[in-house]
Image: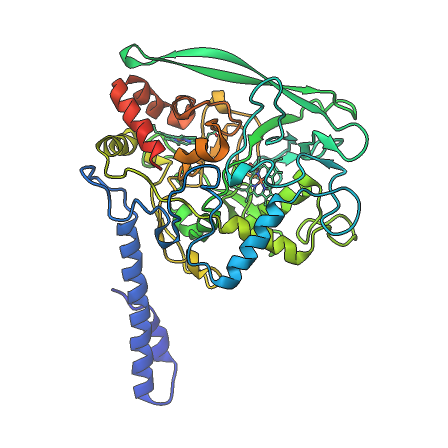
Length: 475
Ligand code: HEC
Ligand code: HEC
């Protein structure tokens, strides 16, 4: 081990030689603890090669912050266990505000709109789970959000898209008075995919119909980026991963030649003015839970807040209430896994690792020590994501750049809890726009950097494909 502090310290005269020696030893010890800790963490987060039995802690994907695996619609609505009592109260208040339907006009819990997509966070993040596209001709498109914008000159900037001059950064299908901006209709075309062993699957390609635009046409070069609300669990843990651990996984030029080149997105933290790694949102364009929450209030519900204000008016949600919602969003617990020792699950796990899913869906991280969130600190967690951007091919492309993300790139979504989607949300639609109707369809849509992996899934024996899906359902 090298003790870097040494040379510098020896040049400083510190009075007593005794004190100097003690200081040097203390510094050396701290450095060595750090080094030992780093190599310990590196070892701990290496993907396993042994698929004969579950790994010691994998049944609890958030360590001591894991919630018991519930069933039914409330399975994602559990706070982090071991929350301090005072924080439990805050969580309950945040929960109430997350579900609260905002009203038009002035006063507490008012200020909805004038244009909006939903009246509450909950209307999109159903039961703290994911949203869905319209489930039939009678269903609405509330939890499917249409971001819009025109690609700006100089893609490698933070402002890769400019908002539409009339409609802003997203289209809103409700208004407190007058005609809403638009109505969204989705239609699908089916394509059959032939799989090994005489199996087939059908993939539906969506077409988005922007109807009844009430304020004139969109700018000619405005792109559409349809996005379904993602699940809300484990977000505080994702925020607790050190940026350097995520950045260590980037490989923009694919120097290891595995065909996979994760890229980081970047954003300005509006609270500090600093450039930060983006990790939230479907293109990782948002750096913090607070910033994503602020954007949701401002853009989705039409509620100004301490981060995103409306001119000089006081914010429509108080700073305290805003903090409750943001902290609530950070403290929804990840549920325990099921059947980790099951033979089929272990076989599916092996396929998940050996087929190459883990090149993007990274199994493990170790969270930082956060003074303000001790309950989420220093935990081995299993999100199955690298939180980086990947080119997923033309089939999934929206042509909408965001931050440094291109029109074909998406952030690898975390997969923890994905097996509970049916319980929580009453459906199993997946991917950024909910086009996949089950997990197999979601995998079969993988193209671009994931094309080779997708082809292996198409070719593997049917019982292996079933085992892979069984593994996903155990998460
Ligand atoms: C109209 C639907 C809608 C509403 C209402 C809504 N969200 Fe979202 N939410 C989304 C979509 C879509 C995304 C993905 C955004 C993106 O890709 O930029 C998202 C992403 C998020 C994320 C990041 C999750 C992740 O995995 O990166 C958080 C946190 C979040 N929302 C919190 C909230 C909060 C808090 C509220 C209420 C103030 C709220 N949302 C209201 C649709 C909605
Ligand atoms: C090149 C990186 C990459 C590889 C390799 C990869 N994925 Fe993905 N995966 C992604 C990205 C990015 C998305 C989101 C795409 C979208 O929403 O359009 C995704 C989405 C998913 C989803 C849907 C998640 C959700 O919340 O909607 C599942 C399930 C999934 N992947 C499973 C797999 C499996 C199984 C494999 C291996 C056979 C695999 N992935 C390989 C990057 C990858």
